[in-house]
Image 1 (cartoon, rainbow, N blue to C red):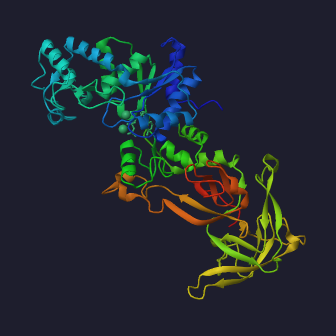
Image 2 (tube, protein in one colour; image 1 turned 135 degrees about the vertical axis):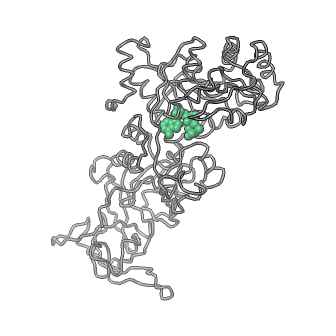
Length: 554
Ligand code: ATP
Ligand code: MG
Ligand code: MG
């Protein structure tokens, strides 16, 4: 791989390396909360953090930020590890859980209490919110703000021991209720949640908040550059405050702009709603922006890494067009996937002058631009074929160069054919069959008399083809900013986001295609045999990964 493009974070690290600020170390971390599956936004953070560790001979920790027991689950822990590995990154020995630090975090909290820097507040969450003030008005001190150290310690220990109900008390930092930065107005550090945790069981009845946990976890692990998204810019003051009060090792928090993708929602909470509401088939529905969904869709890890590199890392919020992702996918697949022929919406063709008992075995290279790459397969040609229904028009406009009554086209790798007649169902008027003639002299696709045809179309033999289901995917939402539309954002789901072609016909060489194998279906796009539902020789199910930029017959 090439040298990655520079960005402002790399510039900071270069300066740190030059000044020896961290003793020449680079230690980053990727800290997901295991409350859902990872999405392409997380991929940006993964590529950034693991990429920095790779390029500076440092380390990147995988840390589960598991301090919210009600929403977390081992299913998510497992999926996150699978997805990070699949993206091509490795945390080695360095897998951590914030919950492993609960004892240490508790001790740090007591130290803050003893230093007069934290207090137990009996106000409800609503009261605390209501007295926090606004950007223009200071907050109001809690009536419990001046409890003695002894009383605070006693109450905090009793909170730990499970004496109080959920919500009855919290531990707050004692900073400044008039601070211009609202994050510093006595933020909550611990709350009571008398629930089991997926790793610590029933040991804890109180759980630390994100802002308290995160900085101290970074400190404990010796992180150098703690990279997070811009929403945490205001929280940096609290990150610094906690570490400064405790006088412990102090990493540097750096914020970058999160990835926002057009026509996509990207919060785990919202994606969970889609899964639970049955709007998609699961976290790995190929329309989902999750890593699992992209994988099942057929997107490669290389394409995702390339995409993350192309979009870059900066400080300004931007919305990225889906074309950027699609281009990265095509660029990666173009030279890697063999080309085959599949007819998604079949129309029967009978070659009236082709002998009924004859079959031609035609040779077709898998990589027409680079034939030696994978060689060729044979495709059978006989009297009955299928072509794409859209490749015939009874009354074509001027620029249409495909099949029409009296018109001659080339069948890819085969012969020129001329349409003599379109047979209709008398009841519906729908065309059910084309009757065509072929020119035996054009075998392989060229006419010895030098005659040209403008259109080349794909086809399969009706007697040899395989039945398959092809699934065509489009953007999941109709609006580029689904979260901004009026009303329920779920009603903005694109009803055409999944179109199933139930009677697709594939050339016989695909009989043994394995789940997860990718192909370019000529003129139709890149496809993958579905990882879950495709069974070779039994049930053939192909997902369209992405369409082609352009096709060779108009
Ligand atoms: P979500 O709201 O989607 O659940 P999150 O930030 O709550 O996202 P975390 O599990 O905390 O999810 O995220 C782990 C890491 O991934 C964090 O460091 C976060 O900054 C980063 N991350 C999450 N979403 C994005 C995004 N859209 N672009 C870049 N980085 C992201
Ligand atoms: Mg988070
Ligand atoms: Mg979240």
